[in-house]
Amino acid sequence: MTELAYLIQTTPMVDTHEHLNNEAVFVSSGPDILNSVFDHYLVSDLVSAGASTDAINALRDQTNPDIQARFEGVRPAWEACVHTGYGEASRWVARELFGIEHITGEALAQAAPRALAQHQPGERLRMLREVARLDHVQVDDFVTSVERDESGPEFFRYDISWMSQSCGDLSFKDIHALTGISVTSIRSLRTAFEIAYAKYAALAVATKTQHAYQRTLQWQKRTDTAAEDVLLRLLRGAPVSPEQRLCLGDWCLEQGVRLSAQHDLPVKIHCGYYAGNAPMPLDYVHASHLSPLIDAYPTCRFVLMHTAYPFGGEVIALAKHYPNVYADLCWAWSIDPRSTGEFVRTFIHTAPANKLFVFGGDSFWPHAACAYAWQARTGLTRVLQAEIADGELNEAAAAALARRFMFENQQAVFRPLS
Ligand SMILES: [Zn+2]
View 1 (cartoon, rainbow, N blue to C red):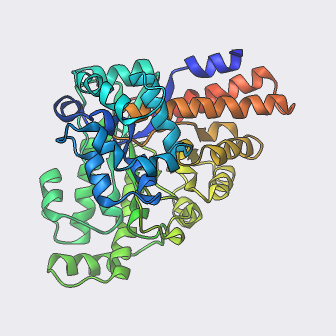
View 2 (cartoon, rainbow, N blue to C red):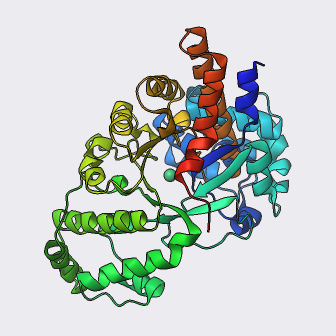
View 3 (cartoon, rainbow, N blue to C red):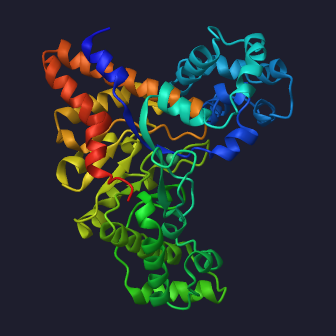
C-alpha cells in the first residue's frame, strides 16, 4: 500500500449525508442478511434489470426465513448488476461483513444468523466508527425537528428537513405542534418558521431539502402577497394549481435559506439523479436552476449534492463561481464510480480545493454506509494516484487534497454542535 493509500484508508472521514434508521429501529428490526447485502439502491438496479415486483417484495420480506428462495427470484437480475456501483457495494458487504466471497443462495443462507446477531445496542455506532472509520455522520431523518441522539450525541448529527416546505406542502397541524403557532396569514407562517429555527438550529448541523423529487429546482423570488394568496387557498381548502404551489414553495424555501444563514447553518440541496425507478424528469434537477437563489443569499452556504448527476459540470461551475457554493459527492460514488472519479480530477484543476466534500453514503443501514465509505476511499485513492502518475500532483499535494476533501473542508463549513 502506498503512503497516500494508507493515509486515505486511515483518516477519519466526515459523512455529510445519511438517512440512517435510528438505534431503536436497528435493534428491534434491523436488516436480515438479504436486506444487509442488497440495500435499497441495489434493489432499484434489480428493478431496472427486469426483476418483477413479486420477486423484489419477496427479497425484502424479512418474515420469510427461506433465504435461498428469496434470493433465487432476483438472481438473474443480480447477475446483471454485479458490476454497477451498487453491485460492487453489495459484494463488499457480503465479503467484508459476512465472509461471503461469492454470492449464492446457499452462502447467504449460511450467513443469515450473523446478520441477525448484529442487532445489538451500540453495534450501529461501532460499524460506522470502526469499520467505515467515520468522524461523524450527518443524518436527514426527514423531519424538521431535531433532537439529541443519545446513541451517539456527538457522532450522529441531524439536518433540519425543509423538503415539504420547499414543495409548498404544508401541514398546519404539524406546524402548530412544532411551534405553537396557528397559521392564519403569511406573517404568522413566517413567525412559525422563525420559532422552528430558534428551537432547533442549535441542535442541527444543516438544513436539507430534496424538493427536486417533487418539483423543479428552478426558483424565483415571490412576494408575500403572492405567497399569501396561495396560503389562504390552502387554509380554506380551495384547489391549488401546481404553479401556485411552486409559488408558495419558493417563498418557504427562501425563508429556510434566510433563517439558515441567520443561524449559521449550511443549506444542503439534492440535485440530479433520483433514487427509485421512475419518474426521472431530468429537466427538474439541474443545479444551475438554483443560481437566482444563490445570488439572492450570498451569506448562506449552499451545499449542492450528488454531483447533480449526470450534470456534474454545472456543480463544478457553481462551486468555482460562487464563494458560498460547495460540491458534495454524497451518493455519487455508488451511482457512478467512474464519472465521480473524473469529477474529482476535473474539480482539482477547476475549482478551489476548499469547496469539495468527498463522502456521504445516503443509506438507511450501516452496512451500506460502510460499503459506500470504502468505495469513496478507493475512488479517491485511485484518482489521486492517477494525478501523481500523470505528473499533475506530487505525493505531498495529493495527501493535502485528501485531508481537505475527507475532513478539513467539512470542518470549516459545518459548525460543531452547540
Ligand atoms: Zn438522501
